[in-house]
Image (cartoon, rainbow, N blue to C red; front, side, top):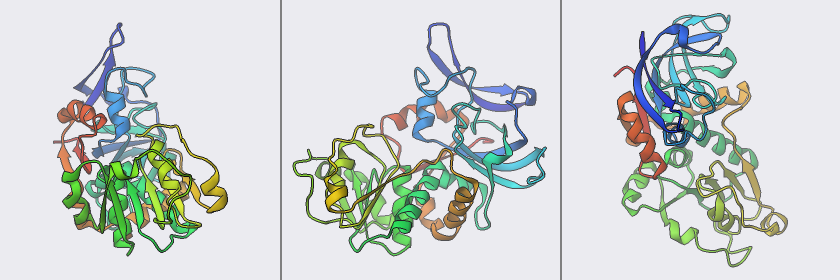
Length: 327
């Protein structure tokens, strides 16, 4: 038997989450069984745990959209017992039981070998948010980062924090957008050279083009803020958009794309090809300073998750929450 955070829904549609003991035969089908060591708390996890369980279709359910651990059993020649692995994406924790469990069983194709230079705790300090941030940075690099500062919106969140640290480590000036003034020192410690108030960027778009200010952008918010940012980009600069916290609508025109050559790059961390996932994790091991990573981390246990799931939906979680599923 092992422990897991299990979400159930009653006949009236009300969900509840509790730490429960499970057996191996209750795990879903898969090629590889992993002894999970760490997982994280992301916005989607909050949705899965919270009232209504918006992303979950079948119950009971184990949330946790990522995990790192050790292979315990494998029917796939690529992985053997004792191998360290990491998993992000593939709707684990939504359509398939996820990382808030001491054991997980998944398809081998969903896993990536843990790269040299990272342990399982560090991998989950990075987690899906950091993996997504690296995908965004790689996309900006592929399209060419211009001379101005790189803007990071939602900078105090998981994606924004890691993007800020990576970009600063790579030598870029980073302008970090936050709606919480108390996070300024935290963002500066990650390498941000400029703190921008959210209200300054989130004003109503008055003109489709403004001054050429930003050499690139990692946008973790979307909505009106993204529309405003598009008109502030340097000629030929790119925006890597990774989040929908500000809404899926985009009240913008085509003018930034036509007259200034702005590139809008959509980043999806869920179904990345294996080669992209491996490349991103290898870059994380190489280009994310671990001392700054530690500054982002809050520890948690399985029993902390119901409250943390609610807190992240309210925007009250800063940086990265690492869940020690065995604590």
